[in-house]
Image 1 (spheres, one colour):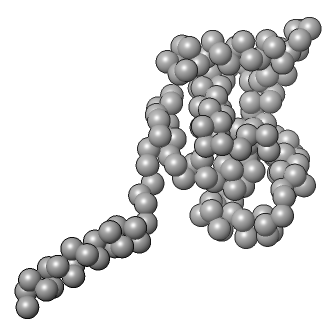
Image 2 (image 1 turned 120 degrees about the horizontal axis):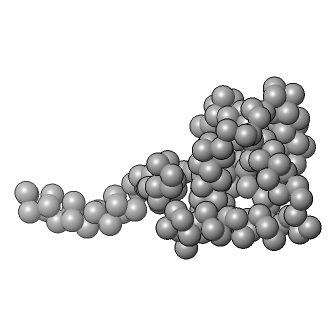
Length: 160
């Protein structure tokens, strides 16, 4: 009788393994902050990265860039703190750009993101945009200058 139980358990093991929920996995630590698989999923599902960014690898690179830029900005005392109005405007832009999939509140709840988490993300968006405008205002081709700057930050951070 015990052998039958062990055989049944042995035969069920692949099905049990397939039914398990995957554990959130750490992808990378950048500037002292962890990027998890769930961070990539949330950024995609809540459209916190540009719509043109669709693969996990591309989202991870966007999150890496965000973290190294925020670390660089944090080291600079020249950037003015975003105002509540700036963040509220960014929130409206985000809501207008959301594709189908429920209300913003439903989407946040579905991804287990709080309103405070979203507002912190959007505040950082504003902080990054202000910094880029201030730093690269005199560049004739600001987009190229920003890309070179990000590549340099990635090199300094040891990122490919």
